[in-house]
Amino acid sequence: MLSEKSRNGLVLTAILASVCALTLTGCGTTQKSSGKVASKKAGKVKVKKGGGYYLDDGPMDEVPDNLLEIPDAEPKVEKLASGPNKPYVVFGQTYTPMTQLSAYRKQGVGSWYGKKFHGQKTSSGEPYDMFKMTAAHPTLPIPSYARVTSLETGKQVIVKVNDRGPFLSNRIIDLSYTAAYKLGYLEKGSGRVEVELLLPDEIERINLARQNAGSPIGEPQVAAAPVVTEKQETAAPPATVVAQADTPAPAKQETVSGGQAYYLQLGAYQEASNAQSYQASFSLNWAHRLPSLEVVQSGNYYKLFAGPFNTLAEATQVVEEMKSMGTSSFVVRR
Image 1 (spheres, rainbow, N blue to C red):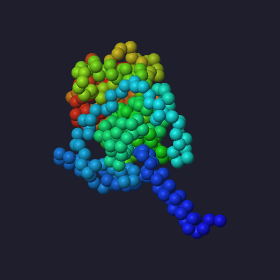
Image 2: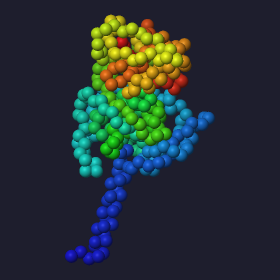
Image 3: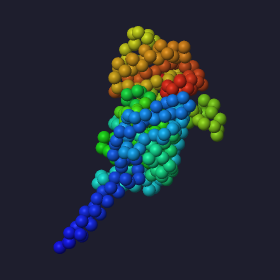
């Protein structure tokens, strides 16, 4: 039999092993806790109490005040890494990453991670930079790119997936500090999102739109103007509805257009009332730059469009103007 001293040693060893398991490198291995969040002040972003994220994590004491100006990740079709895409086990659960780019779209809770992991190596080997547009996901290929949409605000960002996590059952993605800030859920610590993996054909369209917009090679690229061909559901020609600020137009079904006009997608909402509320707001604040506004039902979403614009350059110019005012949008063909 083991002596009392030996038994105590084994218990101590077990406790230390448990503590180590909770401090593994990676954004999803720590417990959620209340802490500090950023509050913008003149010149810098200070911190205040509130919100929530991972234990001992949070923003820096001072962070840049131009986070909205940081461009989204520039999507590319890259060779997938070997190590990060092998099956792995965390907390007794086996995760099997995707080994090729294929259709993926899922809704759930998104969270974010910050200074605790800033500068540490991600699963891809790159250092984590909380001020870049990146994300951690349990199974999406590394590296890959995803469009993340806030189901609460309708805002969208494009991030590079270069890390693993989160490993809490109710969360589907961990965004960088900046990505969460741009989606609008930084202070809450988490928010309802939809994650969509970008496939090669869409990546090609996004980059073609950037080239057509005239961004010089070697300079920062425009991140808010990908061109997306809308999936069509009916065969009737569309009738543009001009929204009035006091009486938002009802949503209509997504339709096929014979032309190839450019529109801005301003948001995608699960509730028609939310879409109509934003429609009224944009009618008041952006009437001088937006030709017309319409809410279109597409599947389970109510999408808010502005247009049509005659050229991609004209649409992209408005995207940039809205971006400078803290409003995200992107170009679609309809």
